[in-house]
Amino acid sequence: MSDSQNVVLITGSAGFLGQYFSQYYFQRGWNVVGIDAFAAENVSTENLSSYYQIKLPDSGVSSVLMSHKFDLCIHCAGSASINMSVEDPGTDFYSSTVVTFELLNALRLYAPGCRFVYLSSAAVYGNPETLPIEETGTELSPVSPYGFHKLQCEKICSEFSSIYNIPTASARIFSAYGPGLRRQVIWDIIQKAEAESHIVLQGTGLESRDFIHASDIANAIACIGKNASMEGEVYNVANGLEVTINDLAKLIVSKLSSHVTIEFDGKVPKGVPLNWCSDNSKLQSLGFESNVSLNEGITEFTSWALKELGN
Image (tube, rainbow, N blue to C red; front, side):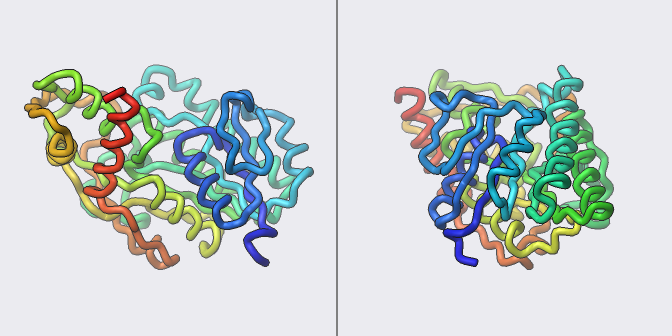
C-alpha cells in the first residue's frame, strides 16, 4: 500500500508533538485526521485532511472511526505536566488513564485493525538505579501522578493487545523539545536569560535528562508505527545521551548575545526525577536514527524562541 492511500488519526493534533506528527505524515502523502478540543479556527490545519473538535473522552469519536479506514492512530492527547499532576491528580488521571481506555475501547468496537501508538513517558521509570535505562529489567517506580497514570495507560494498551488483539505499542518519550514548545526547561532558561544577566534555576544543576528533538520523535513514532510487533510492548524514545541541566544551561547561554551567569537554588520540585539516560537499542532495531544533535537543536530552538519573545 502506498503512503497516499494510508490514513492516520492523531489525537491531540493541535498540541506540540501532534503538530510535528501531522506534518511528518502529511509530507509523506498520508491522509491525516486530527482530533483536539480546540475550535478549528484556532488550530493550524494545513497538514490535516480532516479535523474534528472533540474533547476526549467523547462518544463522537466512534463516528470519526466509522467515517475513515484508519491504518494508524497516534494518541497524543492528554496531560503533559508533572507539576500539574501533583497539584491536581484527579484531572491528570481523567485526561490520561480514562481517555486512553475509552479511545482503545472505541477502536476495539469500530476499528480493531488500526495500529495504535501510545505516547507514554520516561516518567514511568521514576529514579532508576542504573543508567542507561533499558525497557526490560528496569524497575518501574514513578514518583509523580503523571508517571503513575502513564504506566496505567501502558498496561491498558497491553490489556487490549492481549485480550482483544488490538495492535498497540507504547513510546516512552524522554525530554522532548523543539520550536513550538513554550514551556519546560529550555524555554524557561531562554526567557530568564533574556530578561536578566543573572538567572536562578531550580535544582542543583546535576539533574540530567536525555533530550530529543520533536522531528526525531516523529521519525521514531513512524518507525514504531510501521515496524513494531504491536503486541503491547514498549520502546524508549530518546537520543541516548545524558545531559546535566547545568551543561544544558551553559549551552543555551552560549547561543545568546548577552553575558549571563547561572545559579541553582538546590531545590528539586516534588515528583521530578533526578537522572535520565536511555538505552536506545530496542528503538534502533526498528530502523530509527537520530538526525538532530543537541547543539543543532538548541541553536534552532534559541533562534525561534528569541523571535517569539520579540528579540
